[in-house]
Length: 160
Image (cartoon, rainbow, N blue to C red; front, side, top):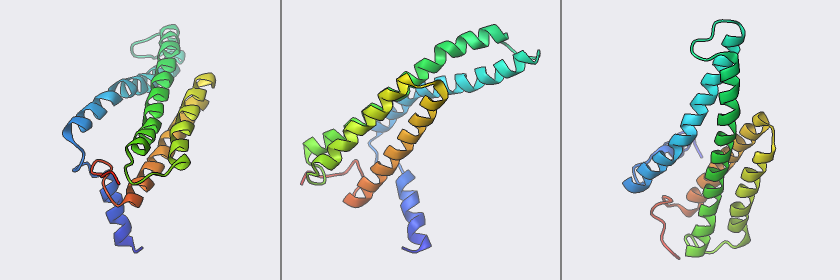
């Protein structure tokens, strides 16, 4: 593959032109709680560091610590739910026969994703967030390879 072909693949991967509007809007809506907890975690961590030094803007050290102890588990739990759902899509593709049946290979994706996702609930916060990030990146890679190998958009697949 030449460089232009790689650029085309990258642009096509991030193009949302073929995504049905309903799926697009509902998918974005589903990410809002995760985005809110992520932004809150980053802000509260910043606030905690600055309140310790004596110049926090809104929260005291005690309040920032308390709120972080509430928000971080919510973020990890919601991230685990999203990751599990993304893995389950592969089971649905297999059951529907999209792209032909692939058997254990496709089912394994649907099993590994929730195993990674739900095991993060038992990890320390930092390890859980890193593991979930790696899980999201891994599923993105698998989804991209699946779409590429089928030579169709994931939303225009036809049963075989």
